[in-house]
Length: 130
Image 1: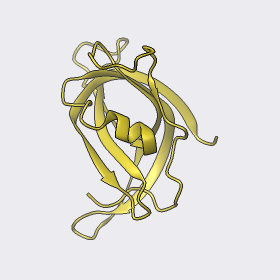
Image 2: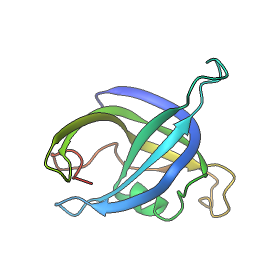
Image 3: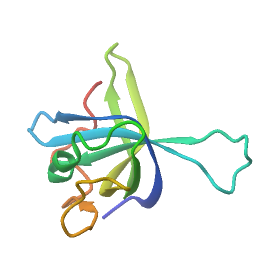
């Protein structure tokens, strides 16, 4: 698998939004606020955009709401898209392979993290607008 691997823990800053690609693949987008324990106390937190795909996206839909603490593993990806105003945009996001909501009732029966089969969509094209 190509890309830079990462793992982090933080709180969901906005409710997860489930969409489908043009090819019908489920895609859940959400953002996580991450505080750097080694940074100065007045340092602002980092906001990490996360995308989960397929079965992982469907299993997390409705569970990742603002304020939920979660652990994420995935790959950093550069995405390009056209926004609602027609402007070309690009940015970094994490294509999630593992997402574990922390301290939530309704975890998988085994107590393991929700895992996706892959860290990306089967079809090319990046993120849809919105």
